[in-house]
Amino acid sequence: MTVAFRKLHPFFAGEVAGIDLTQPLDDQMRDAIVAGLNEYAVLVFHGPCLTEDDQVAFAGRFGKLEPQNGVLTTGVKQRVSPKLVDISNLDENNGLLDRNDRRRMFSLGNRLWHTDSSFKKTPAKYSMLHAHTVVPEGGETQFVDTRAAWDALPQRMKQQVDALIVEHSIFTSRAKLGFTEFSEQERLATPPVLRRLVREHPGSGRKALYLASHASHIVDWPVPEGRMLLQDLMEHATQPQFIHTHRWQVGDLVIWDNRCTMHRACAYDADAYRRDMRRATIQDLDPAQQDLRVA
Image (cartoon, rainbow, N blue to C red; front, top):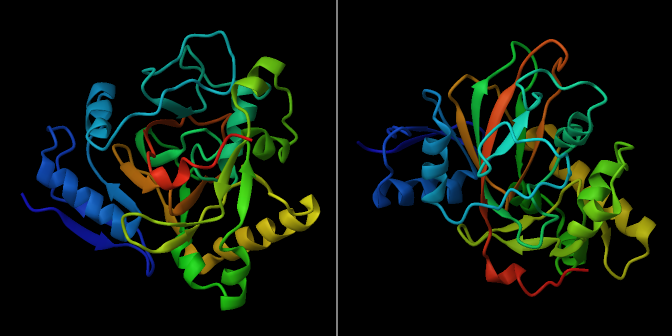
């Protein structure tokens, strides 16, 4: 069967046909998907719900899965496989999370524009989110291609930001929501890291902004000035012309390349509807990022 792509947005994002995700993925099809990701950055697959084992097996064809040592210490058993990230509003008993549950408050950060795991020592390469239960209204996921955002910057701004280094921390993004209730153990387990603000995307050779709500400040700049520049770049990258919105159907699997995209979840009524999504995350082993030490 031939893999086919249909472009969904003027700059990026593609819909994939010709692959049955319930079947083992051979090298040829895997390489076709990687080529599609290099071009489109976000790929959408429609199909039946996968078992957790199927999703993990599919993801493992693209690299090493990220260890699921979460930021929060909850003391409760995970609802899904330890090889997947639970992106839902459900507790360990499959009931709706209470509004005051730390897990629910923490997950509200997903509604900020972000790049998965940019705050970890080894960041994320690909994210693969699979829909088991969707909501009747809201709950979309929006994406931007930060290569297109880079291309659209004035030359003067490109020269200004090209060599800058930024500190990233999960506690920066959560503090923007007023969620600061972390233990000392939780904070020590996830220290800040340094990232280049501009990186060359290995698969396409194009430059991309590496932004996120986790981005705290620019190294060696006055903090207020650096944060203003980061805010300006975030506003530039998330203008309507750069955004693709995915409206979920049960069985959808969406893959995105965290090295050249940002994304965010859209609001929905989490007290009325169940939303069950599960994410596999592939680590980024790009050596160009490994010379930046933990702050």
